[in-house]
Image 1: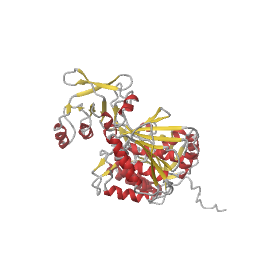
Image 2 (image 1 turned 90 degrees about the vertical axis):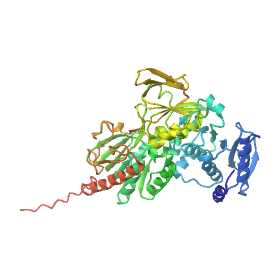
Image 3 (image 1 turned 45 degrees about the vertical axis):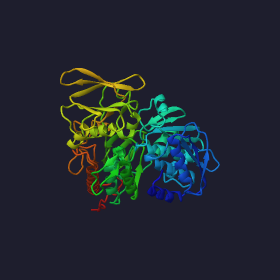
Image 4 (image 1 turned 180 degrees about the horizontal axis):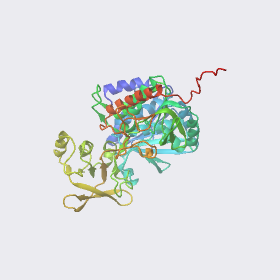
Length: 529
């Protein structure tokens, strides 16, 4: 099961187990059952602190992990390899008493949650977003005896996937009911089940003193801005929905100068670690809702809190552009998807469509062609915008069809899941139907700037924040960087450069303007005549 290099790494990790644990397996004589049994035996043989027992579980094959003598609250239904191997390793360590590196206050919040919470997460082993959710829920189950969690490989348990109409991963169920889908952080999950958490957080944020520089957004531009600002020795904060932004959803990165290849989640982890090396107040799971300029620039948050700063750097990034056709939102997560790497395995052996003929669309088609029965690419224009090398690759694959001059007009469904789409031939005007189980939308990005429309900031016709070469906006003291701006090239390395530029410009602004907190008048004493 494990090659020599992986075994060597695992052996190093297992040295950190503090207390004895048990692995319990529920297997049969199927190939997957034998594979999981072999994996469990290999792990047990590597540490004297790990025992192995057999059991009968709801799903077979599956593996449970728990402290010795206790019932497993963490379970993997399937073979936790691929992206989920790290989840398995962390579950072993944390069940054995190795402490988590998560925020101590958040860990204490988890321990104090009341109620019964039984989580199930459907994943695909090729999904780069799934491990974050699996690891968060596993940690919660390890810390709180009222919480259990089972990871379920959707490709292995297809009957459940069909029964529950799961067409996107990760899909999380709580006590048998749908809880959420897509990437979720530990803090987001905890706050969702901990009643009163939002109010407590709002009160805490309202008490914070004004910042010198407040960065709104935690993507590459925001991380760069925070580091450059903090290095100036000024009070710096970052407020963001999630750290990493859209990069967290990016699989392969091959154009980050000096690094020949990396992956989005790995780069984000390195960015976050770099930011934390400085005195930066990092506030995640918070969404900005308003901007008001005055003595300080005020950023209102959706939870009701307000943060104040002498200068603000906006780096809210962008998100996947939607088709905005009937049925798209209704069937999002039920056949309409935006991440082929994550959700592609759920459509194994089925027919799917990709909307968009740019690089992302053709790359998605090539990726999906190795999994699904057939891919149809629909491109609005009369030519593809993808690089020629990608076009040649797509045309060489027998199960990819490319249709140009096709305007998607509707996603069709049966009320529970998508079953196809309707498009118009822009040459003939004829309306046509395509029967597909999945529709992957790959038509570009839209800036996350709707909340700024009443702020006084000048926005372009596309909703981008207008900036100059210094990252300055139309409002004094407000700067911007990254994909949310009029910067024409939406690239990670360009966003980082924009973040550093904005931070340097913000510092220049600070040293040339008075601090509202400085109440000294510096006026000469009056002289009597």
